[in-house]
Image (tube, rainbow, N blue to C red):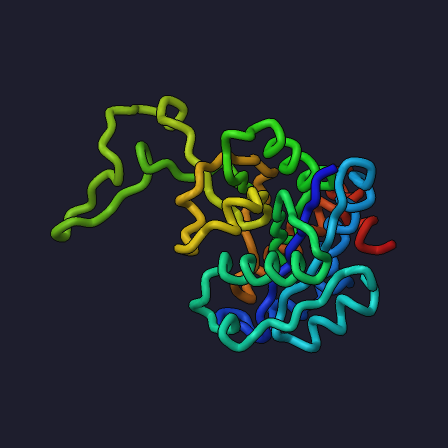
Length: 254
């Protein structure tokens, strides 16, 4: 049986979008969309995984909000040294892993991080990303992506000396000919705990990585008030029209 640590990380406040982690999204607290899918993972894989879920935050309001509904999520008081907006997320994962291993006196096999500001996951996304990691023991990390709407080999440019040039040199005449490229959407990370435990540089992409491709919802994550408003419009449609998103919304509303 694998030991899994699911981390949910959120700072108090936000420079780009104030208190975004405390917002209500289509009638439910935004963080519940992440907490619900984490609990669903734990319940569905209880026969093969021993799963701990923790919330790492310096926000008492966020702790209270989560604890009101999800009593089995461990609460970690984030130390001031990890509270700044320039602190790499990997440092918070290190902190979560160390504290939870110490508390429960066990060694985790995998860490799964789920971002609060990415509520548009389908019901199977986290389980499927984890299964890809199991199928790819050669990779230290699996992270979620969406297919990019622009391609540096075809329709992206840079400006050099006042002149616009194709970002990556190529002779492709259609986008379909160009290599596939992806946007990291920051929704799901599945990491070998050994890699995280041994990491000293907090450089996530130094890991040998694979990808899990998610449904393209147009907005990757919520980083501004405009993102939030647009994602609510998209989410309302998806929760009504697409079964796997509808099931996700039902989890939140249980």
